[in-house]
Length: 373
Ligand code: FE2
Image 1 (tube, rainbow, N blue to C red):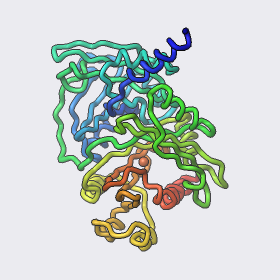
Image 2: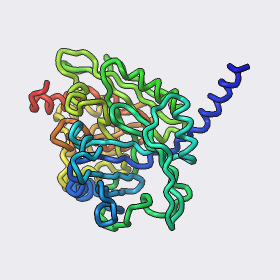
Image 3: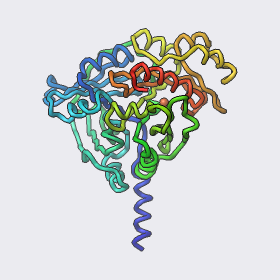
Image 4: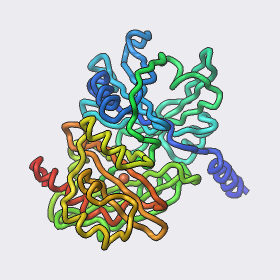
C-alpha cells in the first residue's frame, strides 16, 4: 500500500515540475558595466533593465539585456566578499543561472526537491504595483543553478527591483535560445543525464559517442537532453581520453569546475546576423577553405552562396529532414571557457554532427595557440 502511494506521488510530481521554456540566462562577471557594453554593442542586445546603487541595491549591480525572446542578466558584486565576487574569482566571467519559466515556481521547487534536486534559494514572492513575481533556485552541475521563474501574474519589466531602461540597438537578428551546453567531469555525464530525466522529466534526444566527436588529438562524449515540449535543449559533454588534452578538459581546468560551455542563439538569417556581428567586433572560429571545397559533396544543394559562407566561416550540416547552418565564437573571456553559437535551422533538428570534426580541429588550433594542447 505504502509503495503504491509513493508511486502515485512520484507520477504526480512528474507532472508538476512543468518547465515551459528558457526564461533568461544570468552571467556573473567582474565588471557588469563593461560586459554589458560588449553584449549591447557587439551582440546587438537592447539594455532594458538595471538594478544597482542608483536603485537602492547596495550589494550588486545587474543589467538586463534583451534581443527578441532572449534575456541575459549581467551581474557584478560591489564588495569582495559577495558571493558573486567569489564566483568570479573562482570561475572567471561566466554563466551562473539558467532561468526556467514555469507556471508555479513553488510547486516546481517542491517537486524538484522531492525528486532529489538540491534546493539553494527557497521560493521568494516579490510583489510590486506590476503584480506578483515568484522565483526559486536549485543546484545544477558545478556552481551553476536553475532558477524557476513564475511571471504569469507579473506585468512589469524583467523583475521587481529593476528600473526600466531603454538603450536600444538595431539588433543582429538573434531570436531565441536554441540550446545551452554544459561541460562536466570525466565519468559524470551519465549522472547529469539521469538528473535531468529524474528531476525535470527531460528525455535524451541524441547521444554522441567517442567515435562521433574525435579528431587526431582529442575526444568527448555528449548527450542531448530535452524538455517534454522540446523548447529546452541541454546537451551535456564530458571529456574522453585521447592523445592530447580534450577541449572539455581545458574548459574544466580554466573554469575550475563544470559549467556552461556555450549558448546557442537561433536566427532566421545567419548570413545577415554574422555579417552584423563581425562588423560589431565579435570574433569567430576560423574554418579552412578545404571545408567549403568539400561542402556540396557532403550536404548537396543549399540556398546560400558557398563563397559567402566561406568568407563568414559559417558551417553547414544536412540531416534527413533538412539542413542547418551554424557558427561558433571564440571564447568571450580571457579564460578559454564560455563561447556562443549562432544557428539557423532549415528543417534540421540536430546539432551539426557532420561539422564536429571540422569544428573541433578549429578549436584545437586555438587551443594549441594557447599552449594547452
Ligand atoms: Fe551547440
